[in-house]
Image (tube, rainbow, N blue to C red; front, side, top):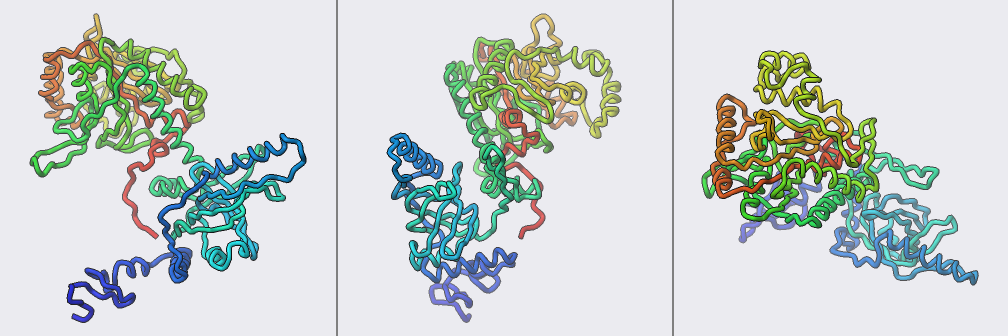
Length: 547
């Protein structure tokens, strides 16, 4: 066959290079370059080709910075303040030999020179490019730059006549040539001097789907995820300082449990067995309490095969903690103290605006009995209400799934629709019906209810907590009841976990535990009303088309 070499490689007709195979008659490089693209993208590909003709590597390997952009700015202002403090009337200082790098955010070509702004993770700095200073190679490179390109410059930092701190570039290095224009928006400078960036994304789903571009052009989005990182760090610091041990439990499990939810499943080929992504960390963490690790926590991802809405993403982050010799009252005190402390440390306050209301995460939080709140909202006694009456009320509230819900699911759904939705400030709702709480101890003196609480804030559950059930016979019976619900069609009910019951037989001391939705806590502290805003890469519907 024409174009086949003796070593089996195929010659690509357009470029003449040898490849193991071709796609549509050309090599992968030529196929990629010839894809149908909008004109702005084609123009950048043309610049990429020109750079390679000039011998410029469009994708650099490294750049040794002397300063981040904010550091360079601060260093110059420090030098300037020192000169002014000396009071000798000297010239404005310059800092020589500064090497900085960033993405091009703006570019103003003046012919013989150009002014540009570059940005890195949290800084922004003006650079001045002069053709006569950069020479022929640098001048040619200037003509091939675009917004969004990553560049490095070396030179002196000075202040322009207009008063802006600037790097006079004596050398220019292209670090990465971008082939797709970023959706930069308009920028305004307010009266207080702060820059406000109006996003170039017109479609919110595109921002979630292309989070990399969203982060690149929106400093406020970068700041939101810095806050999220600080929240997680501070939760760890708070718990570590109180003797809790951070642990890691299996994500891939032979049997899921610890919550009422439908799991994601997969298959382990070597063992030829069905496996599940965990829906909660609970049962493994309590096994560790049995093993004398008496204060443990885990911050990790859980997975629930459920619907997607403003407070639910199938993959989410939970903090679960358990500590021996405690009950749910102890966990209440820990919860309100920890969340208030974390809010103050990260944000400097416990008061936040959320969905048109002000929520205060500072202690103490109100306490409300579950059954009393349910009865007040529905007019029904949750212990005695007939299933038909619960179902009729569920239909009245507009639940399309009312006919498919079990009794327990209807109690939970009605409480969510009629009680939780009306709560703003954090409230401890405690004393749930025992049939809703298969892993919690019965309430002392009222065995029809559980020593359990949920923290409800701004209309959704933030924390779920128990005095943990440690009677192995009772736990077996609860699992068996859940198994019967599964057999009756409830896909969220638990299965019997015989190994967990065996662990209880070795002795679980009195234990208090909780699960905190980290994503939801970040939502409250940043005023974001959709969980997608605080998850870097939320799960979305498939993308219908690409350009």
